[in-house]
Length: 221
Image: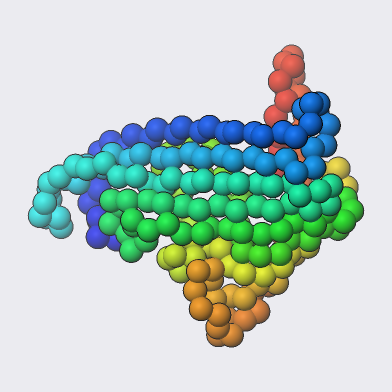
C-alpha cells in the first residue's frame, strides 16, 4: 500500500511459496560444479481491508500480488558467477504495478577470501535491510525505519538498486566488509551525475554459538 491508503487497518495475510530447480552437470552434489545453474522463485499475496472513517470515505477489501520474484544464479567457473533477478507485482496502488522490472544483474569475481569483486546492478551495501531478504520477512512489508535507511530508497522502479562496483570479503572468520562505488541515480533509470558518486560501506561481525543445555546454534550479528 502507498500513501493513499492512510487508514489501512485489519488483517494482512501472507503466503510465501518458494521452489527451486537445480540442474547439476556432475554426479557429486557436494563438489564444485562448473556451469551449475540455479533458479528460484517466490511470491507474497496480501489481503488488505480499508475501513471507512473520517479520513477515508471508502470501505473495501482486496487482494494484491505484493511481489513475485524470479532469480537465477549461474556458476560460470570456480572464480566467476552471474546473478539476476526480476520482480512483478500488481494491485498495490503503486506506480510500479503490472510491469516486469530487473532488480539486480551482476557478475561476481572470487579473487581471494579477503578480496572479491561484484560489478553490475545491485543494492548499496548499507542498512539492516541487507541482512534480511524478502522471502524471510515475517510479514509482507518492511518497517519505515528500515526502508529510510536504504540509499535511493524512494526511487520507485530502481527498487533500491544502483549501477556500480563493489569490493567485499572476510577479514577474519567473524568480520566481513563491503565497499561500493555506484552511480547514485538508481537502477532502471537514465544515468545522471547529479548524485555521483554514491559511496557506501559496511563492516559486520557475525558469530555462531550454542545455547546453554541445547544443541541448537544461534547467530549474533
